[in-house]
Figure 1 (tube, rainbow, N blue to C red):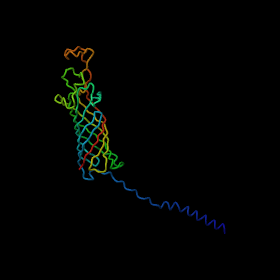
Figure 2 (spheres, rainbow, N blue to C red):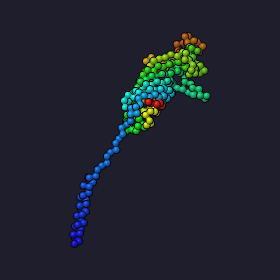
Figure 3 (cartoon, helix red, strand yellow):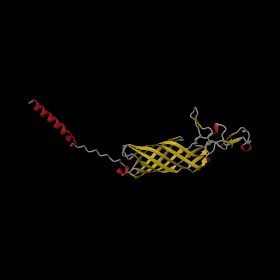
Figure 4 (cartoon, rainbow, N blue to C red):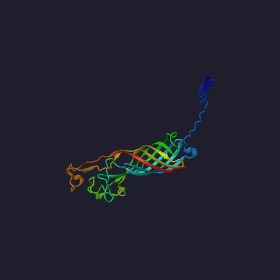
Length: 265
């Protein structure tokens, strides 16, 4: 009798174990949650935008504006305009105790007015939230440069200054300035921040360049040599009185960071 009971219990256990895999196989996996497609300004019938910008780079800071046009779901055309300064890579600036800025051997100031056309392409839309729309932008165009004296070049006629007292302030010397035409471009990465496609809030990091085929004389072209005599006019100086100092610079490059705020409609 005892053996019969044990046999029945053993057979019941074996039956339960053999039935378990079949039960597990009959379970139905839940459906995967649908992944939402990245949104686009076109989904909100938004196609145009205008924004204002602040630029920071090795040359200082600048102000600008841009117009945007949506070309495709993830592509925008960009028209850019900017006003900023330009500096020679050899230039150094020092601040006086009273906040007065001095740049030794500086000859001219330069203001640039770049006008560019570019394309902004959104990437990684399927992996990043619409609140952080990552993009790559490339632009190119023309860059008129206004070059005007850092000091009165005609005061002594030597081609360099004798004292710091002769320096112009940034609003002086414009009457002796001239324009030079060059080209410019930049490639940048950045992100449009915020889920509201009607607002422009973006930050951009990249590299910008300017090129002037004829070169710009930012630094002093001449400096006093061993035989320089301050009591003699430039055309009567000995052969070693005035010697070449700094040449013109044609290529100007700098990393930059740009903050953009505006609206789209």
